[in-house]
Length: 459
Image 1 (cartoon, rainbow, N blue to C red):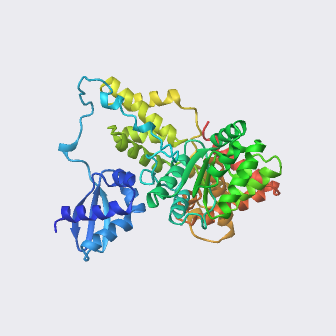
Image 2: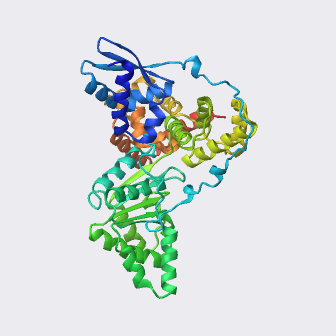
């Protein structure tokens, strides 16, 4: 079997083990460039692909290679420049034609929603890019799909605007319907639930409303923070929740904040929040750079957008807040590129994006960790070591706390930053420091001092 044949067979197996979006993003333009002494060298187009394959997909790659060539015992990755035949000109000449053709103008699939389930078919797990910022939420979603109504019930996903919560919630619904087409699944926002309730009260059809919502196998409610201060809505939803939960039906919620942070007024709201907290709570934080770049590549492949990788890298650097903003920036740059009939320079891309971006904190995790190490007078490298020395553990916990508080890093991401520690270590560190700052004024002053140092570096 030639190297090309071996790699094609391996790719076929890998494609079945990872999502379509990840496969298209990270395995494009890869090939075996060398095989000697049982060691395979895989050529990759850039450093991002190299790092992603090494850290995320190495086990899939090695398993697939070994299953087809048992003599293989290791795999390495090397960046290979594209051949001259494949290099695109810096300023390609576009044909003078309309920016959007008739087929694009008549394409309405983007707006299709299944009236029976209120789900959009485009939201699937295959198109959901997984990174350290959302991998716990993704894992919880898979657990719900495999075993609905059991251990992960209710599932409560929270995080800021535009981070993919709706995509994940609807993907759960679409996946459960795929597994069981006869399942009764329904997705709606808290606002729609409130409006349907009010309409049923006005039309004296409240009994039909109750029967409708208490008959689902899976009920997904988005943006539950808007139930706050709506007493009548809370009361009806509370009874709907209890009926479904007690009969073993699955409930999935999302919010822009944790249940404890939702304003609580009155007994019903307290009891409703308590029910929500009784299940599994997972957060989605802002995506780190590598995840933002992966999302841009996946969106480009999906929309057939052909922008240079350097442009995608610049967008990923400048747009940090949400996936929605990333997609908007990608579309804006693409349209401008088509309009000018040429590839935009970095300066042009930067100017386009700067018009729509708010000034943002540019402090990096490395800066925070370095500042903490300097503040406590310990070698920076020691903070990454797996040691229980008090003089190291304490600064590390404070650094983890600051990464969570100031950069909104997910617990898995924070754990990875500190030598691949488990996410539970990051959770423990955050909670410990968070509680201690409430009663330890000295610690509070130390954290203020650390913040002051790295914030001054940005001025």
